[in-house]
Amino acid sequence: MTGHELGPWSGELNWNALSSYSNFLARRTGDREEWVIGMATAEAVFVEPPGDGRGAFGHVGYDLKNEFEDLSSRHPQHDGFPLMQWWSPRFIIHIRQGKVVLHAEDADLPEGRSLLKELTGTPSPLASFTPATWIRTTSHERYLDQVRTLLGHIQRGDIYEVNYCTQRTATLEHFDPYAAFTKLLAHSDAPFSAFLRDGENFALCASPERFLHIEGDRVISQPMKGTRPRGRSMAEDSAFAEELARDPKERSENIMALDVARNDLSRIATSGSVKVEELCAVKSYPSVHQMVSTVAARIRPELSMMDVLRATFPMASMTGAPKIRAMQLIDEVEDMRRGLFSGSIGYFLPDGTADLNVVIRTITFNASTGRASLISGGAITAASDPVQEFAECELKARSVLNAFGHAC
Image 1 (cartoon, rainbow, N blue to C red):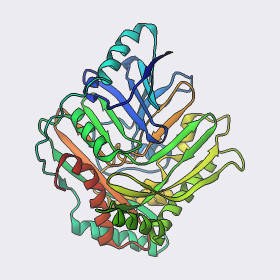
Image 2 (image 1 turned 90 degrees about the vertical axis):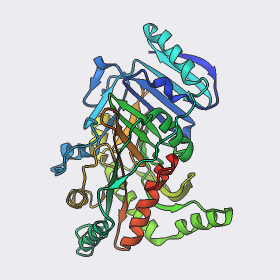
Image 3 (image 1 turned 180 degrees about the vertical axis):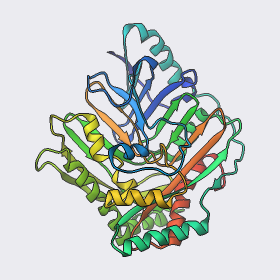
Image 4 (image 1 turned 60 degrees about the vertical axis):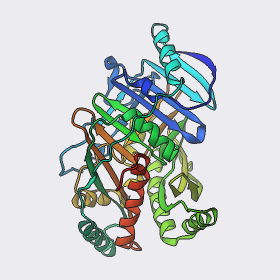
């Protein structure tokens, strides 16, 4: 592909411009002030990321764990997304720090320019949203019972931490995913957002969490554990952030996830290169405060991107410690298969740069059936109170649904 710099740009993106494409992926990397957008080509779909410099866009679902470990899933698949799918884009639109570059072969350049003009043009008027009824597939009472079950395992020493999630579903009639993603992005300002379409299946992802970022041989992972709401005043907001920073339970959760991430990266790292660069930092988003740590390493030169995924996936923040036993218990207590949720959406660019997010704060939607799903959860440790954990789950779900005015 050849890069064509098309000058500066600032403003919103018109997501409806993508509606004529049956497969696309748009990914934000907020800490780099960046959007990377690719359109699929059906002739170049891969089971795993190619290592030949072509670049790849795609996703992996949580149940890829069953391919990497001796694990299984007792619930049927529900969201329609393949377990893992990567594809080489026909062209890539790269917007970074206000500079727009179109990467395309000469034959695709006119179409790419036309799309870019529409994408960066005046956004389409937003459709209104019909109030929806979201139904919890796990009741309040069952949630509390399952948390108590997990606490029993923690007290016996089977695990130290486990991520437990529940699901809401709805049937959405006349749902416009393009307008919905516009609203969700404006509401959340999530730094690792993604908008993914695979035929009739859409993922509207307002993720605040990064899984992996790779540049050259350097890789970082940023596990996120610990949540507080935003305050109604500056004083209350600062108090919530300070409370999160000092909370021993939240710090413990974060450090346990960080330790798992460090261990995962050590499996693919050069000797002595695994370093913690940031410990329990509090980052603020429009709906919540989150606690994030950063660990970095150097990838051994003989390893492929699939080797890196195999060593680190699923991510520490969405599993637990010890990781294998935590994933076994997750399958025993949860009432749904996670599917794309707690998987990853991202890209590998031809220059070797890669960025993979954590699929949380995400609505999956099937346009042919109208079925929508939203999963939320949190870490359970010895210090967890089941009632407070349920309230945190509700807060995370509301951070998505409130973008559309939907009651939870």
